[in-house]
Image 1 (cartoon, one colour):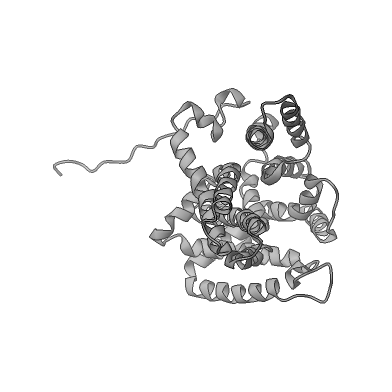
Image 2 (tube, helix red, strand yellow):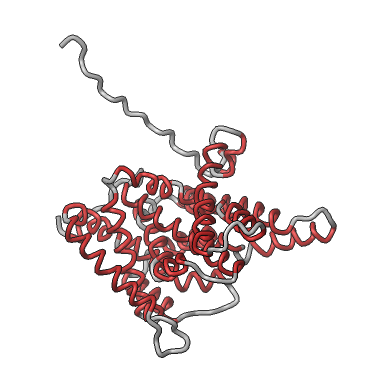
Length: 360
């Protein structure tokens, strides 16, 4: 099948997509855990090098993946589209914004109550901490739908120029939109190419593995060698180079994800990817609590080990919490209640599995 004619698989569950999401969410938690732990302990560990290595592609790949299946839903009626692509994320953002604000600012005093209300109100305009990704996704979905009449190449060039412009304002939304939209839009308009790449990798595993190893060496060089330019610490951070590095890195993650699909002991990574939004929403609390325990009680002086422990807890505790609340009244933490649906979800159709005849 020609590359341009390859079509995305069903949105239900695509193994390599879950693996890629698993990579991304672990890298995100690792970044926050490692940098925070390093700051608290006053040093750096081995995971700081991993975080620097992943910087050029960690969020670009996340946004490429987020845009992959939009072509299957962008033409739905506005009511359904708004329910699935706006209200869905708005519900989780508002819920977890309230939880984060309560954890960080709530105190049983008048001043504490006022500060909590103020911080929640501010969070409606300026995303709080790690929640900016959830805040930005509905904006990307709606923007892409509104831009449908515009030629895709025109939109892509404009988005690429925004990434290259290094826009810096007091607004996280504006900054991250400018820096990330090109990757999301590329996931949408180039989804056929990404799925074709994954299919090619599965049938050329040795070649893909060799290419992945070469990329890793090149990525190490690009993220570790300093440039002569004051505002660009590494070659991977240079304008235009960073854009290319984001896409090449996204391809590398897709390659690694596709290669891992048939390896049984990596199924845990797919599970993380299937529940990436759960981890993303809830990792801040176990991450902060674990870091505080390690630092306060001097459990280890090794920054790398401490960062690894904090990362592990940041990923595993949200997944454990989801499993514990799944069939309880607290399931609203990770499952949008029916009262917040504009359009009811379609019931899952169970296809009966044919049974072998008995007695020949």
